[in-house]
Image (cartoon, rainbow, N blue to C red):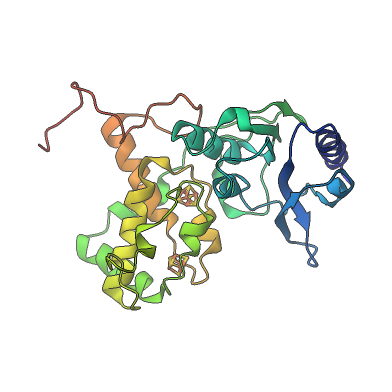
Length: 278
Ligand code: SF4
Ligand code: SF4
């Protein structure tokens, strides 16, 4: 058992016992050695169910959206990516900082492809940190695959995505796992207006996929959860990263969730904004 894991359990046990938090969100073991799952710990004696290892992959912040107006504080274990999501939720008024007790966990990467390009391995907002800080590095290849993709012709790009979206089964797992998808009611679930067709065909699937990307907009924290959970293996991070690259091309260096005071690139209006498209 790692020392950090022991410290996490000790602190969670104490915070539940003294009433600082009403429950804690973290990771627990599964029957598979190489898998963990998000768990909610409500009793001090259950703190030993928490684990911290290289398989703690699922984002924890998404679950805050299920309890936006909690009775008492919610405790949460949060890596750099989770804290970026929390910052953005606070900025978007989807979470209240005072309602959270955040145990920040420096993270040098998990058994997860997306961690290789992570630029924020240390927690950005926290009440306490457990573990040693790790070195953050810029990823010079952050947009490498997007630049390569942009070199294709429009027809080639269309054909690529047409083939991909033919595989989509409209399950909404990408939306459900995304910490930036914070609407209480998603347009895709509005059957009456039928904005999103329920049939499974190329057009309907593409409309859903594109709408999802534009709705996430500048809120994507590049956690990769959307792509990781897609049962059909669609490379949908390519779409969100294309959006982020376009934002950087238009507005300069940008990453969301680095602080809860960050300005929204797409959600703020200023008279000095570039407006050549008007
Ligand atoms: S990487 Fe995917 S899941 Fe994560 S914030 Fe961006 S769109 Fe949402
Ligand atoms: S998770 Fe994959 S299959 Fe499911 S809706 Fe999203 S893109 Fe389609």
